[in-house]
Length: 156
Image (cartoon, rainbow, N blue to C red):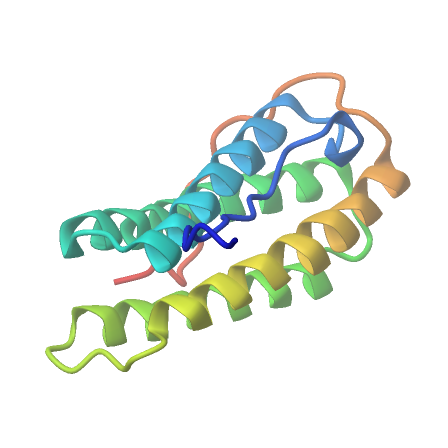
């Protein structure tokens, strides 16, 4: 007989997801943890403050991680940097839209589900495919990249 409990599916970090750069890998692991929080909020309910904190994380992620990754690729001479930055700019724009909707008084039903789907797709397509491309092209990092300043596309 079914228990009535919802089962949560989480994304789990595995070593084969590494892009060969310690800081970027750690940032990706934090993204995964936040994505799992959004999934839990959607499935099990969460206070609005918890949801806002989770969404605010993605602002930090966009401002800091994406800028760091772009600086890393630039420093290493990645030939597809401009294309990769376009993916990042699309993420920044999608974040703005999510944030705007979430903080409005009339956030649409299903917003958390839309976020979960988008972020899951981001993980599967961007991080596991696109980020792996620069790892395959550049190989593992031999040292840390200086912390960059965020690009002019800083989020609100």
